[in-house]
Every structure is written in C-alpha cells, then in structure tokens.
Length: 405
Ligand SMILES: Cc1cc2nc3c(=O)[nH]c(=O)nc-3n(C[C@H](O)[C@H](O)[C@H](O)COP(=O)(O)OP(=O)(O)OC[C@H]3O[C@@H](n4cnc5c(N)ncnc54)[C@H](O)[C@@H]3O)c2cc1C
Image 1 (cartoon, protein in one colour):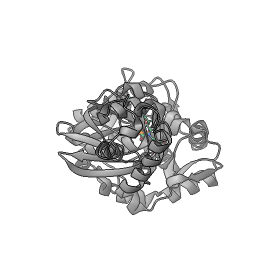
Image 2 (cartoon, protein in one colour; image 1 turned 180 degrees about the vertical axis):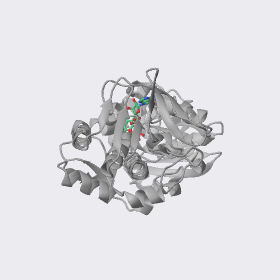
Image 3 (cartoon, rainbow, N blue to C red; image 1 turned 30 degrees about the horizontal axis):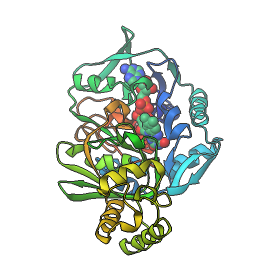
Image 4 (cartoon, rainbow, N blue to C red; image 1 turned 30 degrees about the vertical axis):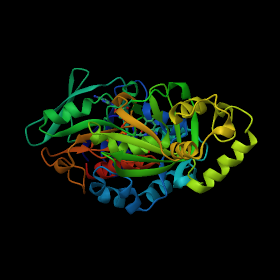
C-alpha cells in the first residue's frame, strides 16, 4: 500500500483520489479552500454539464489543444465509463441537446455530494484550509509536500490544482509554480472559452441575446471557424456559447486582425431576405425608415443597424432605394465586429496552456522528469470546447493518474 497525496479537491483531484484508493492506496486530499469543488458547483450555470455522449474521436476533435495526448485517458476511463460509474452508484443522468450530459436533478451540488460520499466510502481523508506551497523531491522522486508550513511525507503526489480562471474558486495557478520548481515547462497561459472585446461600441445592445445565428471568425480575412447557435451582447463586446467556442480558435492570434461576421438571418438566402424586407417595406411604406424594421430585428439592435446602414433614419421607407436595401441585407447577413482582445483570464471558462504534455506520460499521467509525480485536470496543457468535454478531461486524466499512483 502506498501513501498518496492529492493536491486540490476539484473534479480531477476527487476522481484521482477515488481511483487511487480503489487499488488499495492510503489517500489524502489537500484543499486550500474550506469546502471542496467550488468551481464544479458553478459549472453549467449550476447544472453541471458533466460529460458528453460523443465518441472518443469526437472528444479528441473537440479538444483543439493537444487532444491526441488524451487518447489513452479517454480509452481507459471514457464518458460511458463515467456515466455507468455515476448511475451504478446512485447519481442519475440525462442527455440534452448536443449530447450534453447533466445530472437528472439539474443540480451540480448533487454531483459534488456524490463524489464526497464516494470518497468517504473509500476512506479518503480530505484536509481543508490546507494550501500546499512546495513539493519536496530528492531530485528524482517526490518525497512529500509542505502544507501550511509543515512538511508531510508520501510515496506519490497527484497535482490537480486546476488553472488560473475564476480565481475566487481557488484555482489561482499555484500548481504551475509547484511544477515549474521541479523543472517542468509551463506553456504560456491564456484565456480560452472567453468573451471578446470589440472595437465597436455595442453597449447600447447590452443584454440582447440572439438565438439561431451563424458566426464566423476570420483571422487576416481568412475564415477559421464557423458556429451556429446563441450569442449575446455585453457592455464590452460579445459573449454566449457561439462566441466562447470561436474564442478557442482565435486566442493565439489576438495580435492579428480578427473579425467576427454574424449572419443574423442564416435561414434566409439573400434573395429570400430581400423578399421579406420588401414585404415589410410595403407594410411600412408611409412610415420613416427608422420604424420599418420592427418585425425583422430586436428593438435594441435597430438604432445600431440604422446607423451602420448609412440610410437616413427619417427617410420615407418607400424612398429607400434598391442599392440601399441591398446594403442593408448585406449588413444583416454579414454583421461585422472587429475584435480588440479577449476578456482577462479570470473571466475565462478555461485556462489554455499549462504543464507541457511532452513532459507527461500519456499512458499514466506521470511526470517524465520526477518519479511519483502525476498530473490531472486543467493544470495540463490541454483545453476543450464547451459541451462537457473539459470535465471529462478532468475525470479521465484523474482516473488514469490515480490508477498509476
Ligand atoms: C463558469 C464555469 C462553468 C463551467 N462549466 C463547465 C461545464 O458545464 N462542463 C465542463 O465540462 N466544464 C465546465 N467548466 C470547466 C471545468 O469547471 C474545469 O475544466 C474543471 O473544474 C477543472 O477541474 P480541475 O479539478 O482540474 O480544477 P479545479 O476545478 O479548478 O479544482 C482545483 C482545486 O485545487 C485547489 N487548489 C489550488 N491550488 C491549491 C493549493 N496550492 N493547495 C491546495 N489546493 C489547491 C483549488 O482550490 C480547487 O478546489 C466550467 C468552468 C467555469 C469557470
């Protein structure tokens, strides 16, 4: 029996502790907060999108950064394994749009309670208010930790301290420093799945949510990625599911020219939209142009579109020319926003970058530099899109690390 210390009581650390204790190890978790899983509680807007029913290949495809590194982890403990494990031990799940899996109760709290119950059953000790500040090694092997100023000794360590985003949850990036001191390379940390700041002032549309739009991200005028779904305007720019996904593909090129083109009416071709607009313009022919778009667009968007169209708002609708109408249609099919930056990492769903995958054995999650040191979860240089993929990464890598610890 080995003595194993897990640092961090998030999803990765909890799963690692369960797997390690299930093979007979004596396991302790050290958590800096006074409660476990603070970030887990806020996932999926409090509903916890725990995984996805996608195939392993789709999981890898949905992990733009170092997805292939995860093949072994996904194979050893897949989404199906996770769902079976939850269901068999009393947590029912349900599948929603896009294959997203949630607890049947819609409560992330039930997911957390499930893990705490399982950890108790496996006799895992959790020490709260216990911030680990150093990992002790003899240069080749780990030998222990320093926690709250005190040295404690063990055989293996699983570092599961998460990323840098939402630091109030306890994920303040401590693990990167701990790993760096042992010689590990930390790949540049960047925000991912993050709202975007626009050059244009869109604050008048703040709070407006648009469903069923199609948005394309362009870097130096080249289309990089398109997404269909929902987005919203904020006081600084744009956010919402579609925008968060696109952010994953542009975050590395933020110093280049980036634009987001939004098709506000993807179900209508240029011609069909023209027919539709003509009908509206006939209906409102006696009104001013500024009052002719009420059936077509949300109220808070109309002044912005009118300004961009260059058509005088007080012009009679019947006097709007064909070329002005064509410009207007182009505006609705290609509503263009220039991206100045991402929002800061503390507002990102995920931290991109972290401990270099080149220095971790993908079959065991063990460090290639220091024996007995394992990594799991967001601390590793992998990041995925929304849909339950990031939590599955935490669970799969946690399981693999625990099993080999
Ligand atoms: C708002 C939001 C919503 C999200 N929704 C989803 C979703 O629905 N589905 C999904 O798949 N992903 C979601 N994610 C991403 C997901 O939460 C993370 O991928 C996941 O929590 C990573 O797990 P982890 O265990 O690696 O790290 P964390 O959950 O960050 O846990 C790390 C733990 O380590 C502790 N710790 C840190 N440093 C120390 C130290 N020095 N000593 C002791 N303890 C320490 C921290 O306090 C923390 O408890 C969301 C993220 C956010 C911010």
